[in-house]
Length: 593
Ligand code: AMP
Image 1 (cartoon, protein in one colour):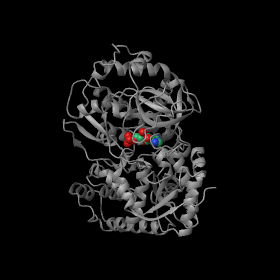
Image 2 (spheres, rainbow, N blue to C red):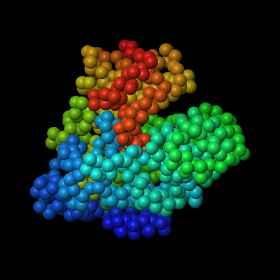
Image 3 (cartoon, rainbow, N blue to C red):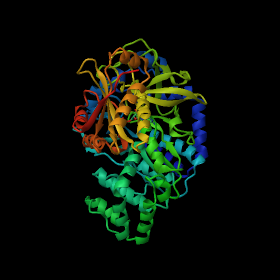
Image 4 (cartoon, rainbow, N blue to C red):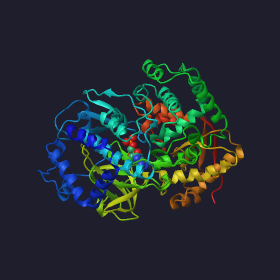
């Protein structure tokens, strides 16, 4: 297998975008057959696994037998199997070949990272999706030979009790030689040395990424991160440290905030005194108003800004656009620690309209219609519950345009009919494979009685209320929510961190606007008869969301995969504690109209 992928990468190094697109067109034209073939391969490779053996497939690999024998599961049901793997049982449990690496999903929803098996085959699908979307991207926005400023970070890697390597999926990817070869093939290696990417302290790594970006600023062709959150975080940090960065470039001496010896050694090879460059950067930064257009001013050859920008990342786009000026923002592909799903092949679309085309050969996909399946939400909202209503998933090529579905993944690394918890809507077909839009993570529903508000509904409501802040030149830095049922009637609580101080009058208005902007009929009718109480807006201190990020990093999460939890459930006690201990003001909405 390794040899095969080496060969694939050798092919990649020839960089033949047209050929990659051709291959993609061929598999998407024949999606149904390719799906059957993917399932056959998965089941043949893993037929000896205890999990599949116990389900009575008896060697059958067709979709019909598969669906009849194998139940839909969530992570909860697979946990005992995964735990045995983590603990070092190398018998064929979920896969034919033993799993040697474990990914930690970001776990920002559940409050702690989840273990997910990772293997060579998942790495190959990563390479495949990267090269597919790169081919489409490069056709529209060709990058020259140069460098990428990538805000990528590794999580702490550790050995599990059973001796398996564990780290976030992005860490497993960044560490792989395949990934490095891929980036080289795509002509844009990361401008930062490995010591920075894999440094043990995220704050120091971020500072050095910024410094490397400035050192190579004229060569930078693109700026990227896995999720848009890291991009925004990086440029917000730049606002704080730019003078120190200029001082480092002026003197050629690295700031003493960098204490990790390996990072200091690696950076000293790149950093030389350059007073003219430092003056130029200083002048450019000083001339900007409110940091608008920072990116093109400092990086004159950057072609685009790239990272996952849909779903829970959308609230960051407005601020990111301020930094980006005319430079296009482009959403990266759609995937998870459990495997990739779809590629963004329309890079010209703004992130708000981004769609993803499912690659039929990177897994076997089913879609659970949402309309038939709304009553099974777990009360504690920590996991979607095991399917308990009579709804039937449909196959990849059977989905209907306009419908919403939860994605069910069967991958090459031991997940069979696994409910991912993500809700997507089908917007069209590319050849015979669906093109979908990410809608929300279904386990993030604000609900007290008959109301149902998704992550997306919350985002829209926050966007609407934030308009009130515009007059005061204030912005919502980040936000989250909870339902408080400790008093009767229960009510929604929204936490906001702002970039400055809002007046009482404006914040009261924001609170009312938040309440009025939830359009869900269940919420509106419950508010009218007061079976849901007045909405509460709590303003938290500057830096509170940084503390939440730090909390997740301490648990082993990586900044690269971080997503602010938009809902704080009962299992997220520590996050709740951070939020509550940083509240500076709170407001209740007035009468509901
Ligand atoms: P992780 O748990 O760290 O593996 O993150 C995977 C989750 O991130 C997915 O299940 C989605 O909820 C979210 N995600 C990944 N890619 C995208 C995307 N392109 N748009 C929106 N959300 C995404």
